[in-house]
Amino acid sequence: MRLLMVEDEERLAQSLSQGLRAEGYAVDVVGDGLLGLEQARAGDYAAIVLDLMLPGLNGFRVCEALRREANPVPILMLTAKNGEYDEAEALDCGADDFLSKPFSYVVLTARLRALLRRSGTARPPVLALADLRLDPATRRCTVGDDELRLTAKEFGVLECLLRRPDQAVPKTEILDAVWDSAFRGDVNIVEVYIAALRRKLDRAGAHCLIETVRGIGYRLAAPGAH
Image 1: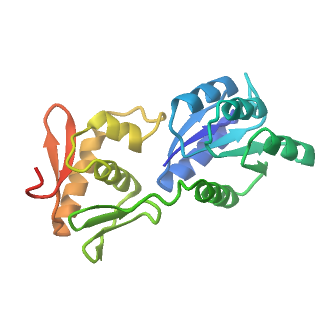
Image 2 (image 1 turned 60 degrees about the vertical axis):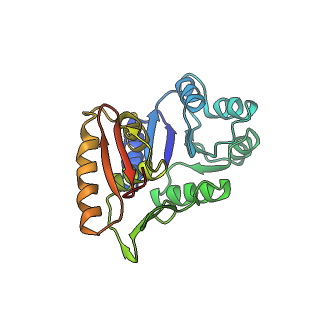
């Protein structure tokens, strides 16, 4: 799942985004309200973590603008203020939940999971091909009756391929889906994870394989499917 974090406190944004990425989320971070609004309009996000006090445009106005445009993305608003009027205004302008700083990271992630459950985003359908099954909600992957243990990035790459079985998925699309705007490395990092997935699928005896489509990317297919 891809999250947008609009937070101008650099150290806080960095620590929160690192924690969320370790849990398997892709997180785009911006530190300005106007840029955050632009990013929210352009991206397809499962949820937005939105600070109240921002340069350019405050969180209230960002939230109001998105709701005027009928953007239903779940919004968790953060603020350094601790007053009932701020909480009421956050909810009145369209935020789904409100969290005052300082807060516990454990509480933040629990609030996010609750937002995703209520929005229906946290229970996507189980993906399957041949004897391979992947459940994005529980983060479990199985081959037959055996669990296939994957890292967060391996899971993301395999999920990306399983959403389009027997189709060529460009390497850049995999990178965009699994990594985020903070990534500045080589696009060939995808090859590293593809190689790891191939080894794990082969060891598990999966009845499907990842094919290289020259000049494009990769395709997950079952033998004889094309």
